[in-house]
Length: 77
Image (tube, rainbow, N blue to C red; front, side, top):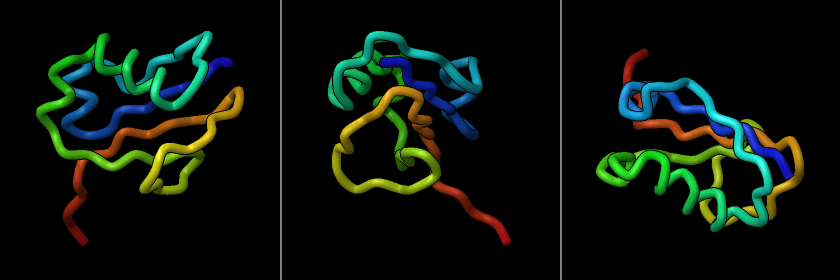
């Protein structure tokens, strides 16, 4: 399956990209491992993950075409 991952804020700076496509993803664990391999420095940051615009607290079951967002803490008003 193909998944698009979006990076926001400092995570976009660290990864030097706003998004990346991953093909052949078999699970959420597989996707996290690939992201960790591509961007090992991301492990040093706090962030939340959203799947299709919904924040998650546990590993979701992914579907082809899902959009995953890695978001740092937000502040402001």
